[in-house]
Length: 224
Ligand code: HEC
Picture 1 (tube, rainbow, N blue to C red):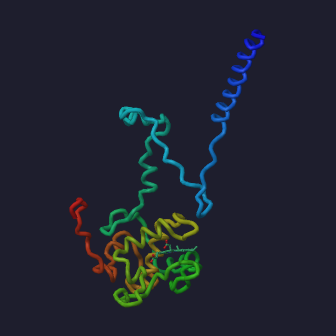
Picture 2: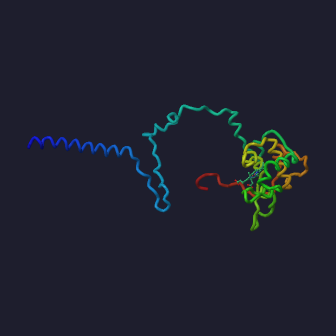
Picture 3: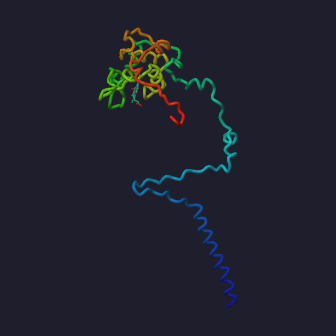
């Protein structure tokens, strides 16, 4: 009798530790179900992961290198450094005429902005000309002609972002030509088919709303 008791105790311990081990495994391998938000049934936001860095030296720049990659070359930087400023900085070499611009506009732009640059509301493509003098009215019409203070923005934007389905596909000459056409149709530069725009003449263009903006007087300090 006493021998049986003696045997039962170790058997019990063995069973208990198997059960414990199993529940331990269950804890380790089954991920908790994400909580759902009652209102929408969407997954609740996950906690923000925390850094594995243990002290500040783990975050030193020399520790943050992956050891891959190399600095961009000057050529690679030049390829994306295409911004053009109102004072003429950044305009590329090249030129284009109103006549060339008209042809290009009809091929590349009119499907969205309309044959008369009037815009196509259904496509979300804004009208590009007109609206001069309307900005202070109850129904302001903001266009390149009425609103934009600098011609450089037109060059920069078209070069960078248009046509919408193929941004960056136009050559410098083509962008000068299209600028000549849009500014010509807006009555800002001449609509003579031979009118040619280039770096110099674009910088000299005066936009009707150039005085409609004031420089930001804040200097960026927290007090202002
Ligand atoms: C596939 C349609 C599509 C084509 C093609 C297209 N555009 Fe656009 N364009 C848009 C849309 C949409 C916007 C508005 C984008 C926005 O507000 O973010 C826009 C905006 C513009 C603007 C800014 C107007 C403003 O007042 O904000 C200019 C300038 C412009 N396009 C010129 C052109 C020129 C030039 C071409 C041809 C080379 C062209 N677009 C071709 C759809 C198009």
